[in-house]
Image 1 (cartoon, rainbow, N blue to C red):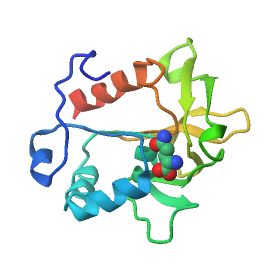
Image 2 (cartoon, rainbow, N blue to C red):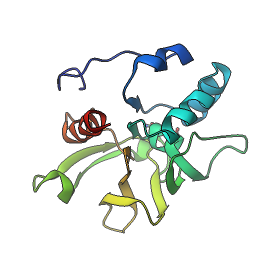
Image 3 (cartoon, protein in one colour):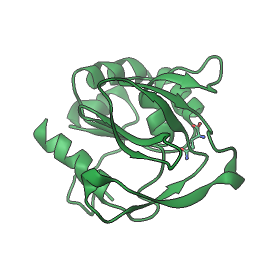
Length: 176
Ligand code: GLN
């Protein structure tokens, strides 16, 4: 998705990989595993430093969990990188069988709705004052939030070919 939008993309696996990047995508997957690996590989501390220094980050699904300051239904030893002043609930809809697709209204991205894939998805239950809710479910729970250059999504826009959140992330990267 990022390449198709003209960005140069490198994987970040070690602290040194971070030196050359102007922005970061924390993808979906399993947040407990990403947490463990970032700590084991010495990435957690430099990532926290870059995030507090203003590096733009797009976190999708597990990536949103990693960006959250507070978690519900986390594993007891689970840590996050933080940055987004939100309480995020993991697996808010249940397991893999409760995964679904839905159309979301996202006024910031224009009038065409976003078709979104929710895969063992989290939701944001308590967005703080500084957090802008970009999209919410009909019951009011937030599924897309932004705070400064940090963008957190419950769903996977890349799975349904929705480019507008990645465009917004790249605009943050250019602005930074
Ligand atoms: N449920 C996963 C977690 O807690 C996230 C799922 C996903 O990234 N699609 O980490």
